[in-house]
Length: 257
Image 1 (cartoon, one colour):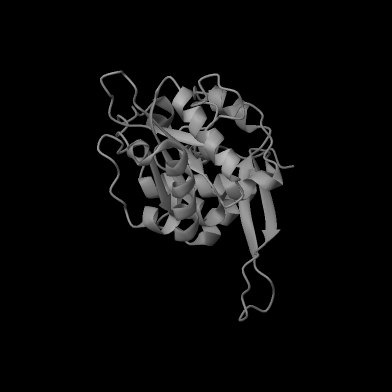
Image 2 (cartoon, helix red, strand yellow):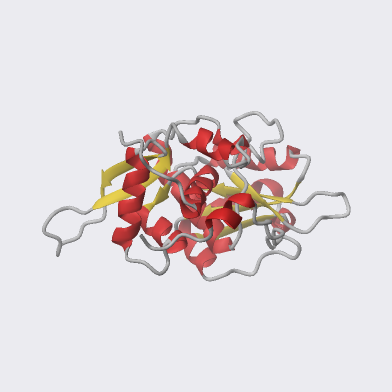
């Protein structure tokens, strides 16, 4: 493991992004943090951070068949490494989200799907523990975001990502969790296909009535990518701009190297 890596401001941004998202692909990291550079630049720098212990580099075969490829392509994924929490504390970053939580392989696709839903909604999603409100694990939402505040003071929209693996009983348990949540004003389900979204919507409306669907929105991934019209008051609230702290002031923006 190499120890001779000096962290630049963009390296810290990589750690911050992975603290929020838990896992991310090479393609997304390159798009967000190396937008003017070739993917190889991102790959090489992420490799250096992984060898230094700030990241862990996960490689798995791409399940999508590629007839034209000479060999089966690989997916390159990154999570935080063992040295990340210390590096963030030194730079005065909030480390509450950096508690050591391993990413089981079975959860990777679900977390990546949750990340995409946040991208499609154009907002930073709060993680499961941030929106749990001390709830039992059976009822916890996958994520959430802040929206306009109701008269009651509720301003949280819970986000549930169903990849088709949730049973009807599990979906309805998620609704019960939403109904018991002290801060939630709405819940949004994201499903991989239009058919699955239709089924989930039917299960919920059959149990709770069509009027309840004003508080519960169900969309397919396709619909979310096409900027659906959300119920009034449930559009993500823009976060205030963060102040640039001393580290960015000293280091400045990183280049493509």
